[in-house]
Image: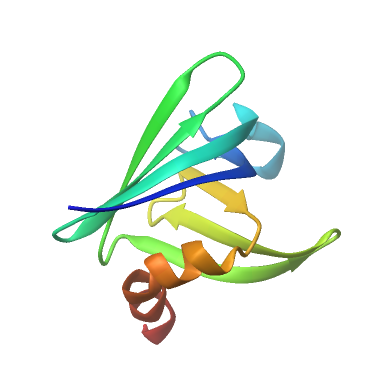
Length: 109
């Protein structure tokens, strides 16, 4: 298993309702991404939120990764296909390189 240890601030959003609207977004939390591990068919983000440690699993074919433009500039958006959780991070070159195969797959569809 490949591993990238890194400290990057971001925002994690976890939606707790099946049918949600923008105003229904719950659990929007600042996080520190501490580590990313790759496994066959996916990767895991290990993050520290203010009150807990979070591990989010993403799988090939079920993850959308893109670089978006926001009010504060560009950011890396990693979202589970079902739209129930995502994390926004600065577009750090080490993260982009580490997740390159998943980014390429996500943008080729």
